Image 1 (cartoon, helix red, strand yellow):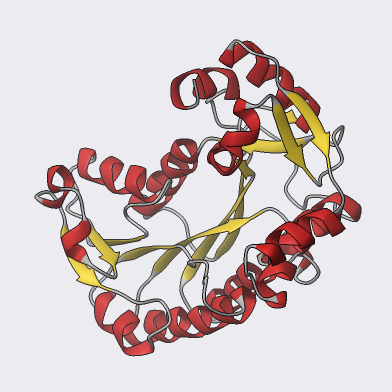
Image 2 (image 1 turned 135 degrees about the vertical axis):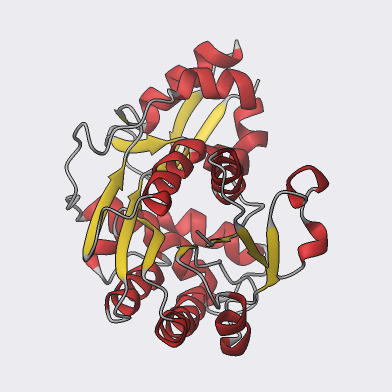
Length: 286
């Protein structure tokens, strides 16, 4: 079985790669520069050069695959949504050209809205493109990554968890390694076919107020939640030199989930994963 793994150095992809190796498979790591793969995993995998925005490289890198784990990368030098749409067309063409029978796509909660969720709109476009590819496809609708907290470390150290989200709105929070476990099981299984959506929700829904309480316990110092306005977020991102389209892609992710969103995938035994935020934070943040 030849399984291709996108973003094999990422928060999820690195775990997917390791799990496949531990399952006795020699996966193919798909990345821009194979030389940057850690030596300890590199000896157990094959590699191929893949640039998601270059159609020829996507076709070449995925030739001969029986299954593909696809992650659409975020573009930092252009409109992120347009970049996702470009990559979506490339992966659809590659799946069709190479006859890849199964694809597992790392999507996101909110993609079912199709429009109005910022960068997630690009993931929605990728879902639609893969649905048209002729392959059997599983879309993993993932919750809010624990690792997103890494982007707010300075504020957390100073005792504040800052967000534009409603502080009391519960959201699914999930460990990237748990997403990897769901993905690896799907990639290894030949028992499913057609199109399916799999929520990946972590063990419980948490509001930012609850997350701040968990961080307080795990880190040993007070962390208070602080809600800021969309205008404040826009101003901060613009001051960092981001373009209007890049700012919109970030701001609208929060707006689209916060203001008018009911998840298509209800929490259930099929969507719950085991890693709790408190233990994860004690290990990775403390």
